[in-house]
Image (cartoon, rainbow, N blue to C red; front, side, top):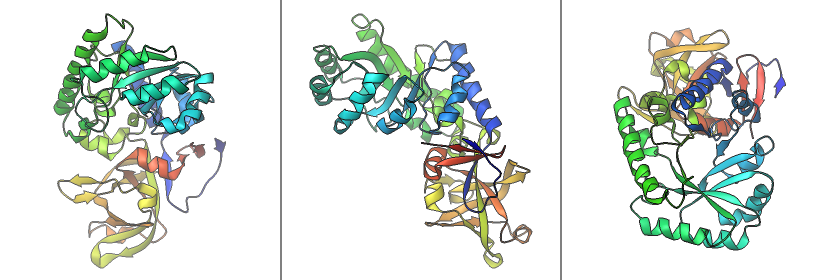
Length: 366
């Protein structure tokens, strides 16, 4: 972090600190009210400084999505869950981290257990990843033989400590209304509770951990759950808005992109801002078809509402094409800046590698 006066001359990811901190506080309070442990996922912001905003609320444990990220945050955090299936090729890094912090890993195979039993030098916690419907990774909750085999093999050594069952209901991202999100949550929790009932006699301290922003944002009752791990909520984005997880006012990041050409006959503006800045994450909009972002009003050093019928319609490597209503195209000039809400703030943030705040500061990322 450093203080700076800046003039935006190229694609720049702006961060509204006030909105971001409100999002953090709201999720923290929800966890407190539900008496569940709050282990936020830091893969969205990937910033030590933003991480400190959580520490101000006494959050003392986090989630990350890679060992590289765990190394970065281990400078200031000593209880980290890596919510990604163990990559055994990174065993040196695993041992280095396990020596100095409380490290939790994600396991879904007996092969991984066998490897870790032989090579681990220090104790680590582990969660069994359960697939509750997303079908990206994890063990089906009905595959009791696999779950029991993992636990039996882990119990033969003294380095692997079973923490519980962990899931990510990523299929909530296909929802388009709160009722659908709540239904995904209920079905996910039902499957996890059955597992907990089966194994709690032998593992009385096992916990159930869930971790997607849509359900954590919309659901108000986390009965049966011990831990939540949302991540994208820190910024939100257009995907979350389309799902129904947030309002436009809660989206805490926007891309500032210079206008480099105007084509009035096509009602299009060309911006400096392409796939290498936004990523090519897209949404299918009922009105506009495929979109890569939406333009918002500039209000001093912050942004306001969506501008009707202005959206990012196409991306190449450096170029972005913005659709503009015919009545508005004459309002813009080459050299102006457009502010555009990204479809996926995690991917955009990862590409941009840092933030310019609306207060005039630079916040650095991993």
